[in-house]
Length: 480
Image 1: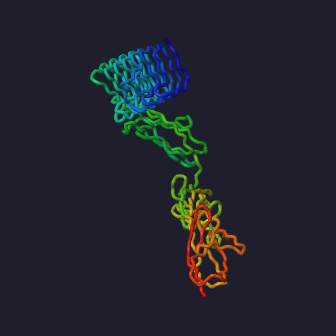
Image 2: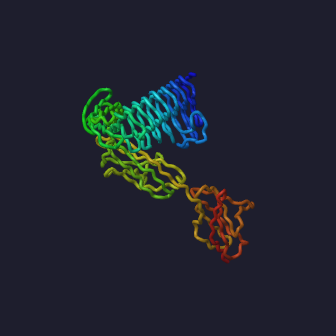
């Protein structure tokens, strides 16, 4: 009647582990259970069970109990469900995370214990029903339900030294009891705190301020004692709801900053936070927004220039590069944009050849007194050209024997064009269709008007080859 489950990776549907033995150790397991009624560990009429250092991830689809279940352990969603047993000890568990059910259900239990561990649920964390002489101590719980602990017809239990955070209730208030639950000791359950440390970085050889602020689960302001340590050495002890320490780093090594917070009120729980604060050189930071444009469109390239502390810079110059090529004016001279109030701008006309491409824009800051050269980049997203074809030449009036030129402008993925007169494709002297290549978006052909063409108006048509068949028409007039 004894058994052990040690160091297992368990993934199951509905049940992870179901046990009806006695004298069981369940330690160092990683259990994942999914299903309509998902459960990590189910215990029925089981005495002397020890759960230690387990991880439970339970994903149930409902928080109801299946009324048609005849299992020893009812079909319901929970991390651990233990029924009609004695001396079940859940101790120093790693993490329970339960969706659509409580972390632990004790029903008809005696002399049992939940001690230490992190418990997360969208239901009550712990439900005790018909439970006596059992303890919940030293746990850290979070739930979006109304209460962390629900005592139903349960007596002589101890709930102490926990950190409880429910939807709107905290500490002792997060434990709810029905009228039949009497002689329970519910005290010294805390409201959780955390410490926020700023900034993310300091500047080498420049005085900076490290600030710690106490944040409470109940969003109230709390005061207490802050103890600052940098790289393992205590540097400051201060009181209040926040505290600051001025510090000048002399090396570029990151700072290991730890702040311990000890609340003045016994309602709140102490906390400690570690933060790695980078140390950087003083300099300029270039930021640029991405741009979306059409080929041929004129856009404004904008570089925002600030120092590492966020202060606007108003000195120095910026040059821009497009895919590595410096932007120049119509005379071929490099354009230098002055930095004014933290901004440098240059107008740029997007080249037709960039249609449908992503182009890298680079802004290069020349540097100035106390500010070394630096650069930033963004992306110019150039839209695909809408495919089209149109005649560039005006409608032609000519006579037989004359040479004329037909020219069309083409965009899109088109490589060749054919021309037709009244639906008949123009051919060469050997009777082969003339395919006119598209070069730099243009297609052009010289054509001599045949002697046999009559004096009248004809329809001249330009047609692209390929999958996207595009056409344009104009009138060709032949005179006598």
